Length: 76
Image 1: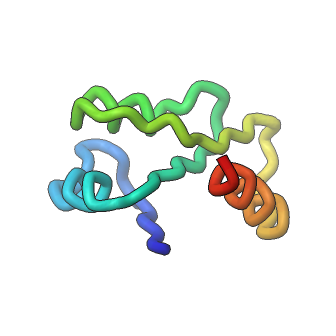
Image 2: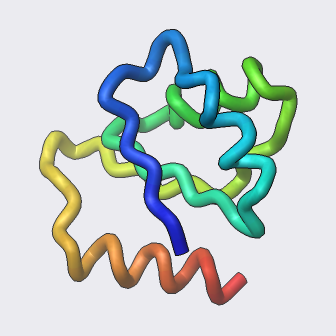
C-alpha cells in the first residue's frame, strides 16, 4: 500500500508515471465531479485509471468514509 500526494498537479512530477505503472491498483481520490486529475494522468501517460473516488459537495473526505470507499474499490 502506498500513497502519493501531489502538491502541484501541473506539470505532473517526472517520477509519477513510474509509480503508477508499478502499482497493482491505482485509486485516484479527488474533490471534484469529473475526475480532472485522473483524466490529466490518463492523457499524459496513456494509461487507464478506472478506480476513482470523487466527492463534489464541497466537504472534505472523512477518514472513515474514505476507508470504506477504498475498501469497496479493493473488493471489486
